Amino acid sequence: MEISQLDKILMEVQKPARYTGGELNSVVKELTPDMVRFAFCFPDLYEVGMSHLGMKILYSLKNAREDIWCERVFAPDVDMEGKMRENGIPLYGLESFDPIAQFDFIGFTLQYELSFPTILNMLDLAGLPVRSKDRTGLSPIVVAGGPCACNPEPIADFIDLFFLGEGEEVNMETIDLYKKAKAEGWTKLQFLEAAAQIEGVYVPQFYDVSYKEDGTIAAVTPTHGAPATVKKRIIKDLDKVFYPKEFVVPFIETVHDRAMVEIFRGCIRGCRFCQAGFIYRPIREKNYGTVNGSARDLCQSTGYDEISLSSLSTSDYSQLEPLLEEMLPWTEKDRVGLSLPSLRIDNFSDKLLEQVAKVRKSGLTFAPEAGTQRLRDVINKNVREEDVLSTCRTAFEGGYTNVKLYFMMGLPTETLEDIEGIANLAQKVVDLFYSLPTKPKGKGVNVTISVACFVPKPFTPFEFEPQDTIPQLKEKQQHLLHSVRSKKITVNYHDSTISVLEGILARGDRRLCDVVEGAWRRGATLDGWSEHFKIERWNEAMVECGIDGAFYASRKREFDEIMPWDHLDYFVTKEFFIRENKKAHADETTPHCRQQCSGCGANRLVGGRCC
Image 1 (tube, rainbow, N blue to C red):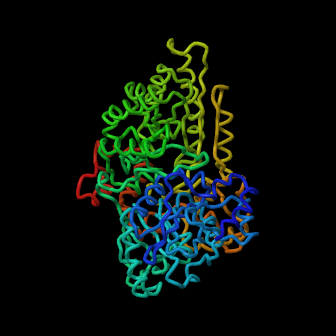
Image 2: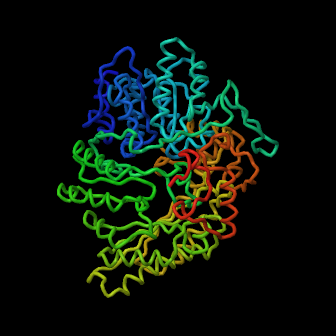
Image 3: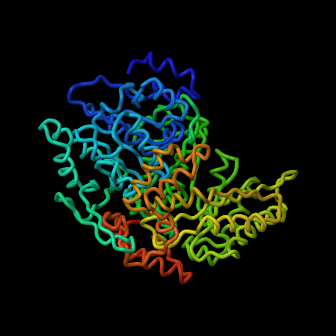
């Protein structure tokens, strides 16, 4: 693409720096004949994609090899898309400005189900057919990975192959196979047949799905020599895995505008609603010295003045205290803020508060998830009301006056009494603040309760559960508002319409491919943004395709039903999920992994005990 073409339109769109490239630490290479070109596409705006740690890791990993050039590609906002289509400018890589249709691979990260139409829009903007069957040449190969790849069926017709699990090794193995295929003149079919033999690679066109009269799946049958079950990939030793020493530094503010260093993968807790807690098992930690070294490298190479310790549950990191003891001297000296997200209520100590307060003194966020002890037991949160109040007391005595509490509504077995429990718990936190003789003088307390609508997800004990309908969720939201008694409590809640659509896509099968395409052809793109989302597009597409959304969202599954994802193995067994579901309905909890192994199956990947 000629840069002059871009110059003509950049002054006519918002935030032109989204589309110019050239940032500090971005990688520009001299193109050679044997170089594999990889377009790493994030199906959302630049500010969101540039905050994503997985993209940073894989971008740097690929570019560390001389024979691979990985470029970043983000979804343009609607103003830029309009100008691109009007002026015949195809979707391009930010490093070279070359059209991505010329690349060998086009890869998407799947972080959110509502981004599925944006994937189609980006392929179309690149000038490519959206259906994989209509892309007949060896290149570009369209690939995808990320958390939503654990049930890729609703977009199976658009993607050539999916990477299941962690991508560092399987990405490189697939690229090496492609180099061989290109050198030997293979067809696309020959390449996909060989790629399907790589552990962690799922080629959906090699699996035939048949259905029963009631609409449930009868069988998933592999073809072309593909394995009957595709196993996810993991990295066993995080101290040896590649981690970037530098990140691309954006010109504009992003959602998480800071350096990030990963401290461990997986989660010990086993919260029954949490997909990430199961699909990222087994638990593997980095040594605190490795983490500290990565943190210093990133701060020096980027100039960031804040670094975040990234994990699903940071305070469960077994080496957190020695890590902070090693990091705090240089972060204080260099005035680098230290962010500790995902803190647990039940292991938030005075010492941890003291260490956090040295570098951050804004608000604290915790997630009780449910308002009553019975419902917290159902979801296996393993947090008691006294834990919540004790943690808030510690925070208030440490000088904090702002607390945010995260909850969900629509959880299995939930009643209106549980909804009232959310308001009652928040009120107890307010009352606690004003009961303390040590409370800061002249200051009031602010308690924000943020309530998401529960979405049952694959590979969780609640994958069998019906999701609340939109009227049920709206009734609960109003009941919560009427239950709040104090002006010191602020209530935020999610759009139930979006949550139910997310539920349809999360547990959908490949019959939804037509719905996704139908919604996109009606204008659906960037649907994670409320200003762009219109449910009418989706409803019309479902009617056109003869699809009943309630079949996917609000129907209870029997334990012996074949799920759309049952031929994909994330190493936590279905038998474990069934046991946990039964315990949930009996209000029984399961100890976390460090207290007692629950036999989920994930330790098979690391040859024994996994934490």
